[in-house]
Length: 126
Image (cartoon, rainbow, N blue to C red; front, side, top):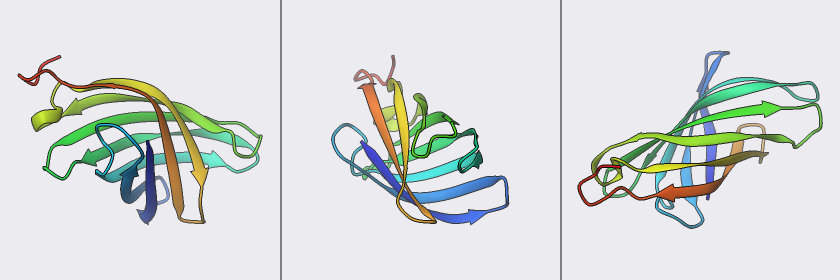
């Protein structure tokens, strides 16, 4: 799945981006809001972390935490993600995997999430 986002504001420490999830899976087609603390210096390295809030068309929400470690080799910004909560039909959703960040433009990013999502049971429990 790819969460394509565009910057909306930044206070120098926290960035907010909004976009849409594409590809395949339970969260594809969802609106995505990313809140991230970005401490990456291009060509040098650093770390970044944050949360994705995926809102599916029915209004249910999945909360996904992510962490990235950048190294000095351009294009190798990768890390991990994990589901940390959900509402409605996404309550009890489990999942984790790897995350790669592709810079599309000065303000736009594609967050490429690979891994597994395990749907919640009918009762919304794990």
